Amino acid sequence: MAVLDIHDLKKTYRTPTGERQTIVEIARFSMDAKAQVALEGRSGSGKTTFLNLIAGILKGDQGKILIEGTDIQSLSESSRDLFRAQRIGYVHQVFNLLQGYTALENVELGMMFGTGLDKSYAVELLNRVGLEDRIHYYPRQLSVGQQQRVAVARAMANHPRVVLADEPTGNLDPHHSHEALALIRGICKEQDAALLLVSHDHEVLQEFENRQSLAEINLTEQKVVGS
Ligand SMILES: Nc1ncnc2c1ncn2[C@@H]1O[C@H](COP(=O)(O)OP(=O)(O)OP(=O)(O)O)[C@@H](O)[C@H]1O
Ligand SMILES: [Mg+2]
Image 1 (cartoon, helix red, strand yellow):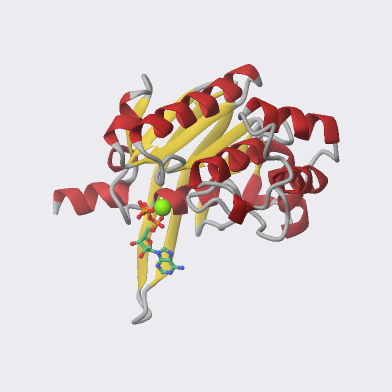
Image 2 (cartoon, helix red, strand yellow):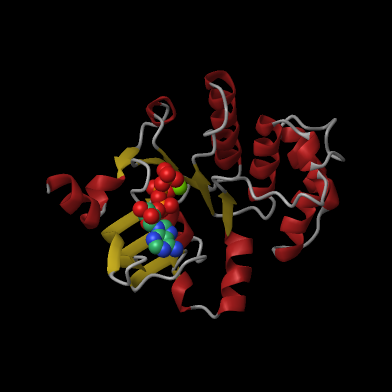
């Protein structure tokens, strides 16, 4: 069964001069449970917008985004926040860690919004990403790669069905990038979560058997490419 099924999705933004600009226009996109898909797209092509639509952070102008059969866009704001917390893990392009909280507290807070606090599992996740000796460190006391791993642990905190990863290795050198990717993919596999990763980095994309180009699925992009 498809864990993610998108139909006729369209998202426009208003330009500074007041016109409507279509950024995302996707007729159909779906992912099976446990699938791992890398979506390629140049800077500004709408990758973050697309993930934010799936996460219900943004609302489309039209279309359906079914996650395990529920259209996330049809939910009220509070139900949507809860639905997102419980079903979706999101590793943001900028990690969005809460600066006033330690690594452990960041993971625990993710749980409190979602399926509930499970302290030992939070510690286990941080062990799993190799931060057992850093759990009480604040983000500013962590390297970029370590913060990235906290973000991965937090994304997995509520046993999500879908994990969205937005250029998760954008700030890492090739060695750490490969390691971080292996970690995200390994944890998703262990937990039977589907993974949708977006990137413009060819080395990252090469690691995925299942690669798609945003230009191929996004009708707006096709027009831009063809014009
Ligand atoms: N709130 C907004 N209002 C108007 N235009 C916006 C808004 N947010 C994004 N855009 C435009 O939408 C386009 C897609 O932005 P998005 O952040 O999704 O790109 P991206 O593919 O993630 O790029 P990058 O690889 O640089 O992160 C950009 O051209 C941007 O200018
Ligand atoms: Mg982006």
